[in-house]
Image 1 (cartoon, rainbow, N blue to C red):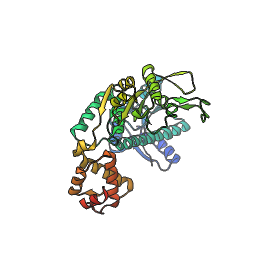
Image 2 (cartoon, one colour; image 1 turned 90 degrees about the vertical axis):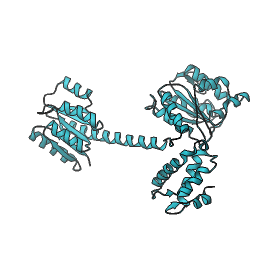
Image 3 (cartoon, one colour; image 1 turned 45 degrees about the vertical axis):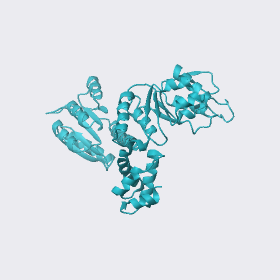
Image 4 (spheres, rainbow, N blue to C red; image 1 turned 90 degrees about the horizontal axis):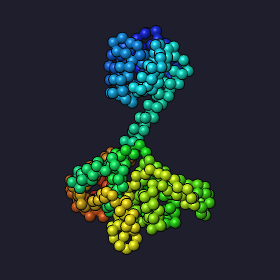
Length: 387
């Protein structure tokens, strides 16, 4: 059901619009307002899917209604309707945020198409907003330890730049969360974040994955392929476990960072790109350089800013907050009632040696929710199922 507000000072025109919209879709819930002040009071109280607003009205004209609405509820699409239409008025209303402008008497088909499209756009915008919130919450950095707060402060400083960043830390500590947080708060947030797990791609395929290939360049290359760098153009590429990349691939990544262009496997053409690079590793790259397994020049290119993510045992005070967070989200995902953890259970979990870091803690919390006591997770449960 869609809520539509018709703002029109002439009662006869309001009746016609109500009749047209009601016959078009009987599920529409139609509201009326005879002037701008009444309209604004209704807009403040109700969540409308669309506002059809006349421009010339007593007390407050339609342009003022448009401006106020866009300040308090910018997501509502507003279609301006006027019998005094001219190009300047149409341009002015669109510039101030109107979805569309229709002259009186309105063409029936155009009016109905505009209403459908405006409501569809509003619903799509809402769905996208909810999806983004869900995605962001699923990668939220949980904790209030001084170690985590230092990382948050550093992210605020570096996110707005295009500086290359190297994130170091043990497996499961949350390096991906840091990368996502940097991207989502950067000027590139509306463009893609492309992730590449360098450790999961066979050495002979990593160049094709990163830079793409042309048809026939090797056995199995049955068509042209776009590489990860090209897919991340104007956005961010996240090279996870960069320390596992082959020396051959390292040399080509170095060229990309130097020249801001790529060349597909089997292709001779340079492709210009604009990509921010964030890399992560669980290895000590300086030791890898000494062993001849990582290029020193690539290290210095990647490590303009280094962010060290601590292990979970270095921020044990965050464990109770993480337990609550995981318990809430896991229970929601499973459609079950949230289980509480006893103080003794939390204390025991806090004292454990989390070699798998935050990832391991999440798995243990899920296991305890499934196998633990029905009302409350006890210390006995932790001893039974957490090790």
